[in-house]
Image 1 (cartoon, rainbow, N blue to C red):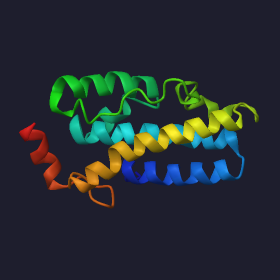
Image 2 (image 1 turned 90 degrees about the vertical axis):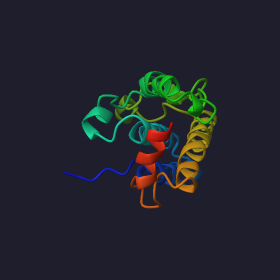
Image 3 (image 1 turned 135 degrees about the horizontal axis):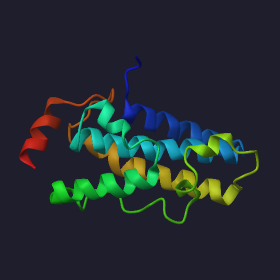
Length: 156
């Protein structure tokens, strides 16, 4: 079984989405931007809800479910986090549409403007979540949870 690292995957997908955007590969830039958002939200689920990979998998690839159900659950469980959680950044972008099914779509589904907005939104979400957790000592640079993560949860 592969060892998951949602923080590393989010960063890798963001980097690749930006490269694809520069190469005018709109469809695949949008596709990877969706995974940036998914992995970033799954980092929050891992840190604040459960480290159990099977429980995390129940959220699947559904960005609406992750952004809605998971983030709402976090807000209820830890009201202090409410100001730290990203707002609905996928609204008004193609990220809300057909993730991850878009990987099977014919070419030319998304245009330059849509791809730029999607990658920009994904980058904003990534930057609101991952660097803060690293700076707070909750996740290590290699993407693993630190001992501080467990203590942090008990204190919230």
